[in-house]
Image 1 (cartoon, rainbow, N blue to C red):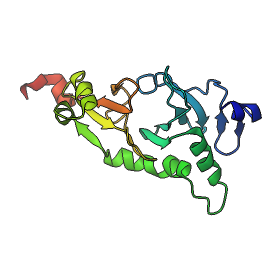
Image 2 (image 1 turned 60 degrees about the horizontal axis):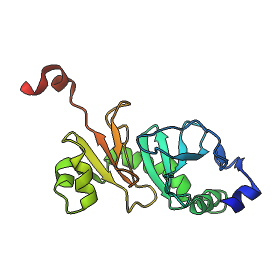
Image 3 (image 1 turned 30 degrees about the horizontal axis):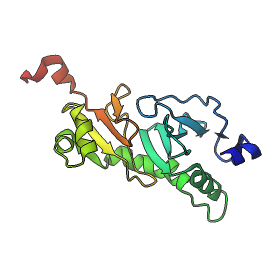
Image 4 (image 1 turned 180 degrees about the horizontal axis):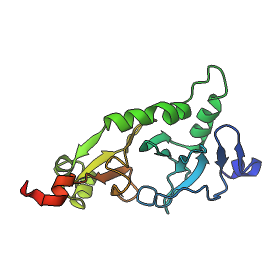
Length: 192
């Protein structure tokens, strides 16, 4: 990053803006990225975010945070991979994982909700991280494990509306979001 920042702090023109300086691009989603740093924006309110943590020694991984559809998608392991794919968009045959994630894969994640794990399965899991996380939740949560994510994998953070409660298990790429009760259940409780 020092070498990159020595050459430039960012640029315009590939996507709306790429900035490595830490300038505020207008992104905040502390439940998912408490120490995240937006390094790129598409000009439509969507961002590529470096998932930093207090103990981070490297700049990575990179996620695409979208508001329409409201999804978070894994983009790349490193800033180098992100930039390489970004520049591929402008070379023949113009195929790039940045473009795939930005244009295509968010619709798949929103429509099919892949990889969602029910609370009970996580609670009973032999994976100590999943069972510990589930122990902090209740049966209204669904969990998505992105520890082995590939570009385009992700979750629908707004699956149940703009006030969907989203949680993350520490610095691990394991997330949960709360399934809201139906309007009838909220009005009449569990009697119906």
